[in-house]
Image 1: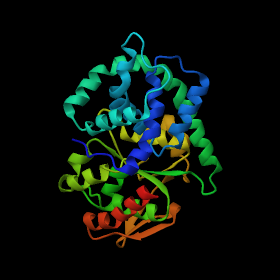
Image 2: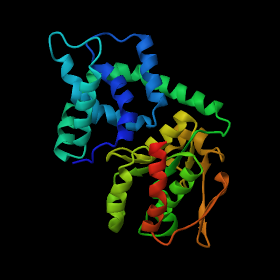
Image 3: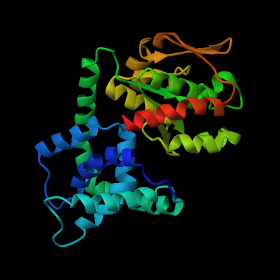
Length: 294
């Protein structure tokens, strides 16, 4: 079973649950509704992929039956009831059987919501791009190709470097998120338990589901909000679609490990590499708590 959401998680999730639940009201949404829903999504700490997953695994299973009745709820779901239902669904996200059942239902869910997503997603991208453009510090969010970083120092890969980078960027008050593909838990071997701990912080760590390109999802999200990407990868497979980002040296940022220090010059980052991944986690954990509480 997936760990229960913390009070801080619930505070972040609740407005997103409420906004997404409107997709399942027995009424026709208006343009003003899509504007409001997109505003909630854009202000949330979640990437677009995370928001899609919140809908797929938490909201849709909780409220989709509303459209199966003769006269479903049309004015809005009771907030307390909705939170309890969505929270219960969130606790079951780790169930393999449940994911299979939801996958089988995916065409039906898409039938009811595809039009809503086509209305909302462009609005979210525009809103986030506008925020990034107004930011005096430049691009708002830093996207880290975490598995790429895990190989900078060693093969097999290690979390030591991604955790170090995340800790330093959080200490400097950056908005940052690590992206992993679904194979990470197998590639990381003995660090799998540490990786599972990291996944309990979805605001800062995204595992892209199997069957999807983690690089593609990360580049898409970075492109949508004017973000920067930390990686040594040249992303040749995605060059045609994301050329503007990939060719911009101020947005695709490489780095190195030299004499026991992690260096990313375009971020003015120069930090000692801890002796182990556990040591890196010990520095990161209080920063994660501080970020959640703030």
